[in-house]
Image: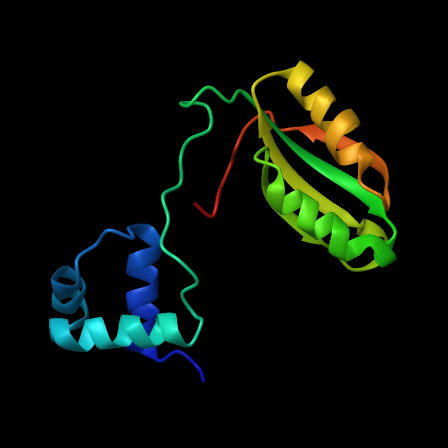
Length: 145
């Protein structure tokens, strides 16, 4: 099913502020609050909206280093690698990519010592993980959150 114009407006408003009230959304899109509530429930039930969450600023909570890590992997180890990455609190995002790109991971850590430790003692010990190329984020230009 495709999202119609109203669903798209609802999703856009919730993406910019997940705490926005149904009554405020209803007023903006010209529908009743009950209609908005039903539509949001349907969007959740059908998997368009995966979850509502809070996005913290890592720098404000003491995390100072963000890095993007490109990792060469053996695809036969993909399931184990995925499982392990979900367990690591340092990992904010992780993607298996097509072609020679392998795996891309976004991590946030307190300092370079913690980054080195993550690379050597956690990521590097997962079977199937090969060479890693780490790029430290100097400035965030645009974020989805």
